[in-house]
Image 1 (cartoon, rainbow, N blue to C red):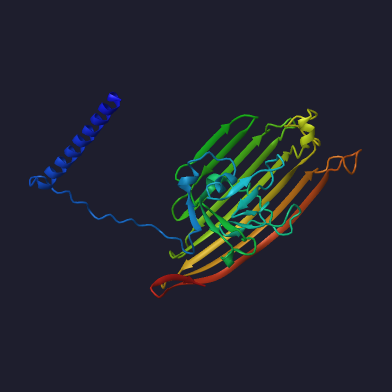
Image 2: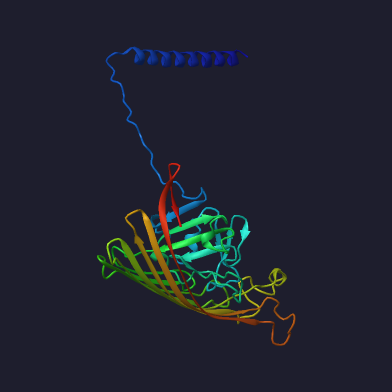
Length: 359
């Protein structure tokens, strides 16, 4: 008991001494006429607020280049709340996208664009709005415009959950030759260069990718990407840009497997029932952008694009349920040529002290 009381007295005395010391220090500071006053300068914090809403943002390239690249879907993961995943064990077809509570499957509810050119494919053999981003070389992306929500009509009917527009670079300051590798025979090679950077700005990029994946039935996935872009100014107040891309890829997919077969040991978790799943795809695009800035703050713009697309996809979801002899595998074939464009004029006006762009 005595030890407990003495400990309390010591604690109280210590607290008292501490308080007296703080008070004495504060009193000295308050009455010391020789101590110089510290003047804190005014600090102004400036930033660009979203044009439409808080759900609109721009992701610059400085955030993109900080992470290892391999696929454009990795760039999408920088968007808060955006999830892009693979399924079916194949790396060659479109990812599955999730945004704002929507399971957008392969792009049904998210609009995707490359410098304003639509990427979603209508009435696709593997799903409405199918969006394969593998024809974009990640290092050529200058930034990503993100709009969450369905209230921006200029992005069309696929932007139910949101829209994403990839902006590509005009040039690279220094040429890039890069090679990387990893497990499962994974290899990636990249070449980017800008032969001219002044009045005529050029960018050429090439990518080669190969991986076998962890599956017993090797993916043997390879992807070849090419891109060329030329940008110039004709009058000093305008900009003209011409871009072309090319993609060809081929892969073997592991496909779905029954859980009961894995749990009983009949099948390895990296195995497959049908080793002939997989596919191949080709996509080539051409895109023309032009805009002219008027002296009154207006902008005239015109865009035109053309694409050729091909996909052969082989899948098997029911294994041997319907055909015990030959299996239930089926093929989906898609061939299409796409062309389109838009033309318009925007004028900057001031209304009630606020600036806006009026079409």
